[in-house]
Length: 257
Ligand code: NAD
View 1 (tube, rainbow, N blue to C red):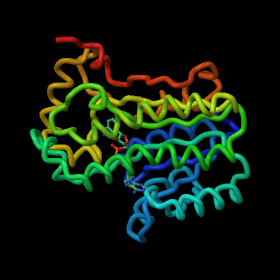
View 2: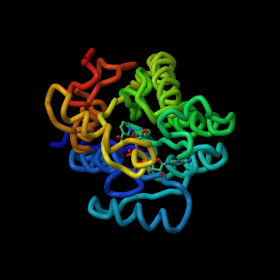
View 3: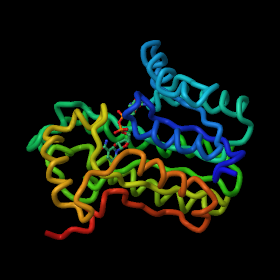
């Protein structure tokens, strides 16, 4: 029997087969979960997401821009009709203007660029958790994807680092609010991976090279390793864990020099 047998959840953030969200969803489905996929609206995006997730069978897709409250309301109403209760939600979403992700450019971040990055990449977790709590019973689990650039300076990560700091802190406050209901909230801090989002970060190639050379495991991580840790956090194996960040980064975050 799979670790997530009989569980149902939403995985936000599949854009293509490189998306971390897809690797999480595939592992969750392998462990027996039924998964729904909210995605950015648009026919092209829907086609891409459908093609990416088709291998797990009859997948439920629903358009939702997470910066739009009305769309979030519609999504959760539809998810309630489709699934009844939800056992888990995966937040794997981030966005910032490409111009704001160039090394040395943080000081020039505009008010609008700052607002956009924090709204889509951090506030959305709060907006999602607030709606999901109506559907998640005790034992439920919410996870979000974060990165070391929210704790330390990573050249080029810039305003996304500020957004990750807000996401990390939101995760802890949500864990406190939802803990009474028996719902857990945690983050996975992944090492750098080549995806659509990370390709917007200036200097990502240098970052990947340096990472593999210096990380204690002396290699990059692969996205499936994030998927495996996600299964742990979504399953009852982690029933005593909340408000926590688990690093899937080949040990990179432990380095001091
Ligand atoms: P990705 O581009 O595949 O995923 C980002 C997703 O966010 C996409 O599916 C995109 O459609 C979605 N999105 C953006 N704006 C949205 C909006 N307004 N409404 C709804 N969806 C929206 O890239 P990824 O690397 O898989 O990123 C997933 C998460 O993992 C992000 O939070 C990212 O910061 C985090 N992360 C990535 C890395 C990495 O190196 N790739 C490392 C650590 C953490």
